[in-house]
Image (tube, rainbow, N blue to C red; front, side):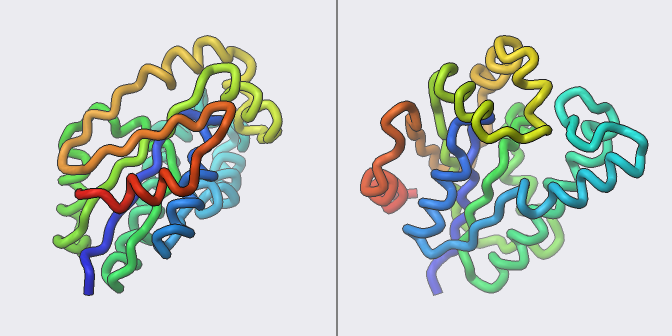
Length: 193
């Protein structure tokens, strides 16, 4: 059995993470796990039950202090289950809160039950400010309202966030106006880890 890979697809809102992540899953036959799909219904119910706006994430203290870590723990639990079966996974999530921790990927290996023999590939999706703004506006998610209300502040923070993780191969894609070339994705991902 080959060594399973964990593809962590990161980038700001509107960068096209989900499109790139789906393409990677399709090209590699990996299990696709999207944090929004996995968690949104439960997250909205938790936020409403706590008496907060179920659509607000960025400026919601309850989401930031309680719910967000639960979302990522759930996503990682699903990844772990698949990795233990020998399946590679594609994780479609921003992961921004964890960028500053160089040992973040190593900390995954400390999770009980996390397989020791996995390869990490961080796929950073980049896009220009205008394209990201147009995409976020077009998708029409209520959870994006605060981003759109102060797009310049959101973009300044999101576009300059530096992922400091070690222990992974880093692949970067520009997903601007012309989108991503599927063949280029395949070539990059089949390179050495």
